[in-house]
Image 1: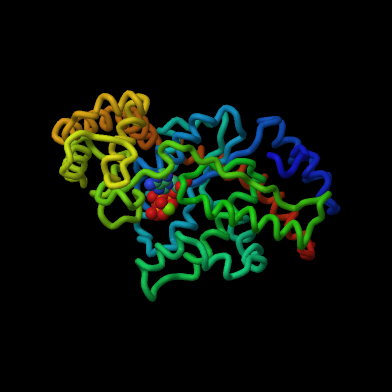
Image 2: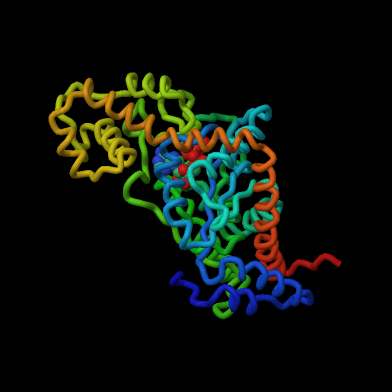
Length: 371
Ligand code: ATP
Ligand code: MG
């Protein structure tokens, strides 16, 4: 955390000047004593469909691998999910599915808080405050907005344009130090930092910054898993074709079918990093990450292979890698009461932290505190 060299507690203390400061400091101490001294991580996935290999390899795998070293908050970002047309009949179930998959992939509640974004109302409220501070032209430059807006034509919502401000609110509410995401979210992270700097400049001071500046955490491998139908486009939940992605909950038969149908090229001998062969690079990358082998090992193993030999190998490796996650998922979904209790606890912990930040921002903006 190079930009703010204050400890968490010092950071809070210096910025709390309201009458109820005792109460806030007590809550802070109570919270900090849980996972004392660790930097904070915040990340999330939208319940816009089932998790796919891109979400897993680009984001969740990193969350799991580093969770012991951080104080983690992982949310299911359901407010983001309605920035594109959505089905009210499936939103709640998709939210459960994503939360259960977090646990099934190995998120450990000893190190992490799992919650649903819309259960903590501070997200919407801070997003509104930040909206009024963020210049419109910052949002118009966002690549994801441009890409998703094209697909929606005249029906594009204000919410889609505003998506990055809500994401900034998600992150800044938790004073996150690190945000592990896939490559596609890098620009939004930069925007989050710009918004935080603007708030601090306009309403804080060098000594008393209001918001903490987060850093993106993007791994080199798996940061951009590409579509099975087009190696130049990223794998996405919102791609209308289910054949373009492998979902973590796909059955072995479906995985076999998708890999059989995926786009390849007519060249024999498989290789990494050939710009003319994006599909080949992507599929070898998937095989590398799912098998746990090194890039060099895979390059040697596959250099003389044709697709007829490679595809069954990738199919088998994928099915095997996903089996433990699928088994865990089933066990969790069979115990909905447990899942509800995880989300209830998560809401409580998340709210405690989020409401402190929201109060701090409102105070800095000059709001009359509730009487
Ligand atoms: P949507 O199409 O609805 O935007 P998505 O597939 O992009 O869905 P998100 O919920 O937007 O998924 O993103 C969740 C996390 O997964 C983010 O950290 C994002 O950077 C990461 N991610 C998404 N797609 C990929 C991908 N193809 N490769 C690597 N990481 C990805
Ligand atoms: Mg996305």
